[in-house]
Length: 133
Length: 133
Image (cartoon, rainbow over all chains, first blue to last red; front, top):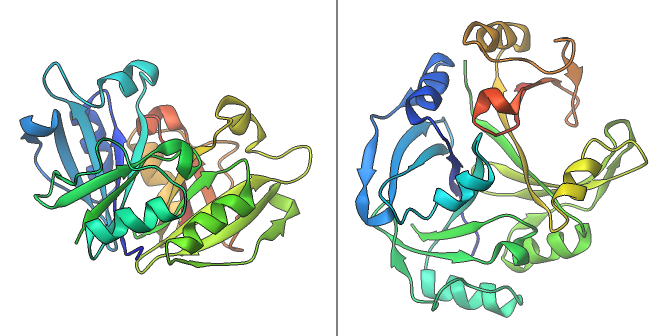
């Protein structure tokens, strides 16, 4: 069920500086996009085979605010894998003994597609997102 | 200069368990390979567009031992970007104001190709490797 790596998300304390660094290295970098329903402002860094998402907190209930408090310099926040069917993927993940976060109901993610997250403790410390491609 | 994402490396405390989880999710997973000159045992997880490298310390001077002491459950350790020319890439990285780790001389990495690492503080908390493709 595990498809392509859709993106690697990096939480950054200074979105403009981070975007500039990747642009200076020759990557195509999007304008910042506010996603208030996800509590983040995001810049997409396009690579030939996948993308980096630079995340910065937006609003008071941002899901990455606590991460940046613990990691004030920023850090790699999560990986996102594409799957063909999010409900089937959740069942497969659970069948391996790993936990799905929340109530297990897919949410609409930053790309407008259904997503779920698995518990980092069940993925060797890595926060893993699954997105229905 | 920034090419494809060659791999995402995840340091794990239990290599067999981590490899099993990715195999159970349907990914093609290699046998463990000891790389004594790099102080790691590695399992490659092949995805359609890139790969995950599961790293476990090997020997007493492993470069990931300290990381696992700080992150006993494991965690995402670094990203590796392909570049066409490692020496030119290092110059470009330095020109953006970011630091290259060590003495700046490329080493031969886990894939037998020249690599360099940039300072995580200059990449928003992410340890970034550049590999001459």
